[in-house]
Length: 339
Image 1: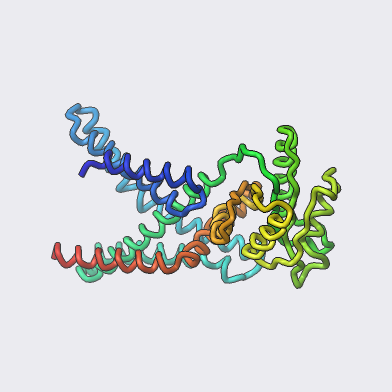
Image 2: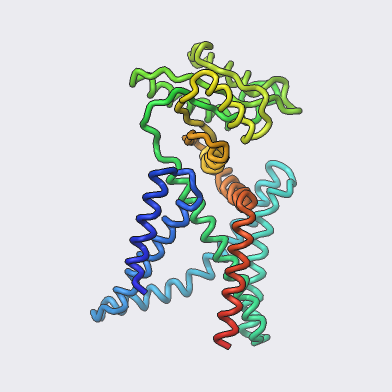
């Protein structure tokens, strides 16, 4: 198989999809597929090279992968467990904070069982079952890499003029002021607003967020107060104070913007880990909005990315279920053929 050819095809499809709409999950998959194909093509080219130093390099790379892969899996599993327990200590024993720990123990269990079958059981049926677990693991790892790639590609800067800057709400502090996460979103919105002003554009803010059961005021009001404190005129701020979810943030903000300017151009601001999924929700509402990211604390980012990927799996549960069934059936047929 000519992997450089297929890599070029995947790259061309990725560029086409991304240029037409960067809010596609498929963007990450085609980008990842092109990278994998070019890597394999490069590997094949090295294998046919007759230079002794090149052959020695290939042997070293193979040994490195053979040794590093299980070590990397062990370290990843331990990192999931340690990080999950740290989150539980700091924020409480919520089930979602336990999920990385569960994933970590599952990976360690599969690795231990692999060693037991290698040195103790020697059972071919167990090898097939373990192989299926590794196939599933590879499927979700490729999915996560594709999500990460799509998220990074979705966060490239916006250089065009906009009519509105939508700030998506987050929780407030007990005294009704903006939280640290929300403050970062607002600050990113302010910096974007000032860049637009330098170009002679005067966009309006749409601060979107209702009042939670544990909040003393709507999030939109707290956000508006913060913007005014930072020198933004109240006439440049539109409050959307009814929404309880991101879907409602997007839908209600869209209604307000259409009332002001039917053919508007807008961007939304949210935390870096959430830009991609929020963009997919905007796309579901047939909105042209794309997102820009506010920075996220590094200690929270791994869990946030893990949670976002799980949310995307649920969001595309039908497609993931079909893909898993096809992958499983294909693997089992392959096992029957070789046996």
